Amino acid sequence: MDIFRYDGHLTDEALAALVTGESLDETARLEMAEHLAFCDLCLQRYTDALTGTELLTPEHSCRESLLRRIRARAARLFLNRYATAAAAVALALTMLWGSAGVTLPERIPLPEDRPTVSDGLRKWNESLDSAMSGLNDFFDGLGQWTPSAQGGN
Image 1 (cartoon, rainbow, N blue to C red):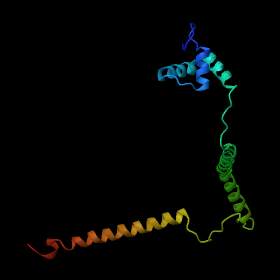
Image 2 (cartoon, one colour):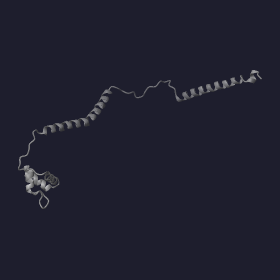
Image 3 (tube, one colour):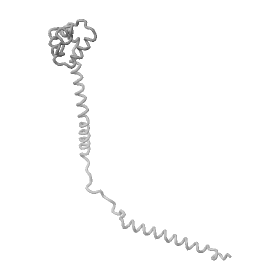
């Protein structure tokens, strides 16, 4: 039996043998499968030949499980998309309603006797003068302890 016609397409006998499931050698089956993989014309002829035969029906439909998976994925996407926005809105409303009775003063009252910058500078000058006078007294006191003041050699 010839597998290919003179123009390179599968013969009608080869397609009929493939449809009926006749025993073909392995190389012939591989050549036919390879040809059907890239030749649209022969693939169309093969499908037309299959329409006369009874097609297999699945034992159970995957339609219900597929719809269930689609619904679960849609719910997961909805949750991921809108849960963050809902949490932000809830937090904003909580803060808004929770602070409804709180009033802020217009100005924070300060004590009347609070120190000013000039007071700080004055205190700094006084402490610096006090330290300098203490240092001068220290050095003046050192002059009393010199050997000439002690009456030494």
